[in-house]
Image (cartoon, helix red, strand yellow):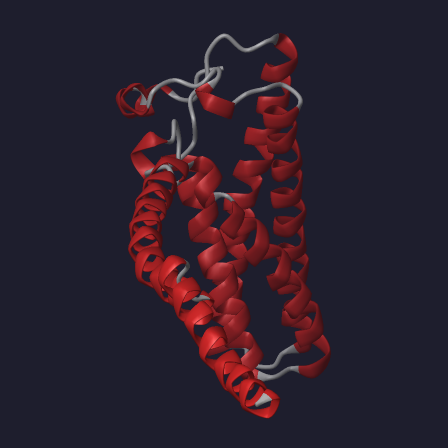
Length: 229
């Protein structure tokens, strides 16, 4: 009889455990079900948040990147081309004196030609007109303009001499030395012009946010009147 009750008790234990598990499963969803519910709800929230972030980022880009028409003057956007090209050009010309490679002549001609055009555009068409400068700023601007003019003239001569070097006096070391000397003067001039230009911007405050600069329309009307100091 005792054995019978013992067997019944043992057989009832699994049934009671299973009933308890079923009861708990109805009251509390399993971790897997909770994760599934979260997976179903999160993507929609993330998608909406992602779209909002992309819109804000695009708007931020539009606010950060200024259009060309927002600049008070385009001089800073143009002037770096002759600085880089003429300085690298004179370095290559120095090398060319020793190696005399025809292909190098074409590279130098391209760099000097584009450097001259950049200097001309920066010094004539994109040169800012100023007003109400201090006496120190006026003196610095005069030096800047002087070296800028020297750069235009010397780079034009260097480009012309390089054309002669490419098409007429090919691989003539003495002529290449002459080209090097003229181009070296051009590189020196553009370096000095850049130095005084940086001094105007960073020490005298001419240019940032259009300070001391005349509007572009005024510049166009006063091209024939020279640069206002």
